Image (cartoon, rainbow, N blue to C red; front, side, top):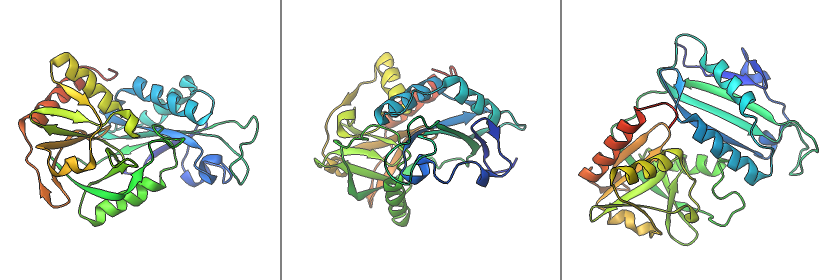
Length: 282
């Protein structure tokens, strides 16, 4: 199948993606919008309800209208309907403030822009290298915990990680605590216990993180949410990250420090894979 994404904008599939969004759309002009990324498995989205709920939280945090679930689901069905199905891929859908002015103010009664895109992904490596970047997440920012389209900070950090030979960048916060990656949550294992930064650190509430916390509790696997110094990455026994398309991803190196992929990480990965296989919308 083609590696080009399938794109739907405001009710229409596009043959020419360049014709889709107004040049004065507020999402383009100032990043006034929110989005979700969903794993596609055998042509079907995984955990779509949880992603919709998180998008609703992001829209509320931005002061935008609630998600029109029916409208968005129609677009998702449209981009996933073509044959052959996407066996493993990524679905991204966006809601912006719609056409606006060339500044931060919103236009009253502007209709939100809805965009859906989907395309295949190549398989990920079995484990990852991380790079700690010098920039920080502001846990007190107006957009803390929201998945907004203002992603330039992540673009810069991810590019720095790639230059360092890593697959993901890790941020601390303004208090010098471990926070998150550009598109992932981070977990460390210390003395056999899994620990992860709380959402008060400024980290996004990842859907995979949320599911792992729930399933671990049900399975008797302890995961503690607690403030952690950024320096914990230099002493942790094991480290892994979670994200929508990477699930539970072991980490084998952080900025030159080799880290073993240990039994606790393996158990978390096996638990997530087993529970995820039980249904598409947990």
